[in-house]
Image (cartoon, rainbow over all chains, first blue to last red; front, side):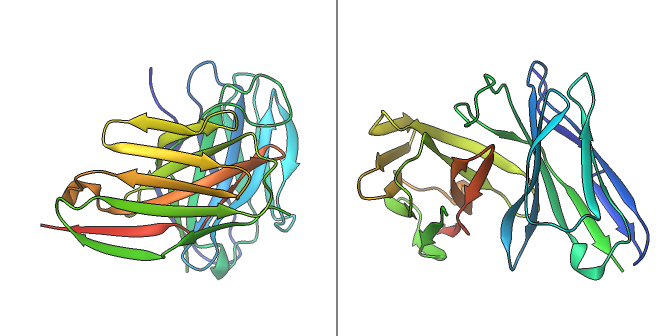
Length: 117
Length: 110
């Protein structure tokens, strides 16, 4: 079974631009989560989607948005990029039985490294 | 609010040594705890998931324990190898998200 895939793997943008990152979960997984990882803040939760619905959102500005499609693939978008948005963006998927809390293992993709100049 | 702490932040050991990584959490009402490994610049690889009803979980040279009442988990690595060098993170779920510790960077010297 193929793992979680993320595209692109690397991205260089300039301040003020926008970017869209893509995540394809493991086949059959219905929950997709996004995290931002920086050396200073560690891993911070962005949002989680289950069956095309956002169930939870972290403390990030409205410039960060996401969506999930009917095939469970997810995209996240960052508008008006700032230097501080430079980070590794990680996507994770799980089967998620439908309950509120995670019961299953989370599987992470390789991440998208975003550099904002 | 759930907070996860990992001590030490970095650890360097000689090859062959047995070692323990620590993870503590403030809210003991957890469903499970997951240990991950992260190689530089890469994504996270799940190592072990311990359900709240379990005390231990083993995979090869790795053994993770969970003590909910004290808010602690440990990851025991037996007979460490240079290939074990990586950052190890623990995480607990909270409302459709995982709360992570900052990780322990492990270096195993040949």
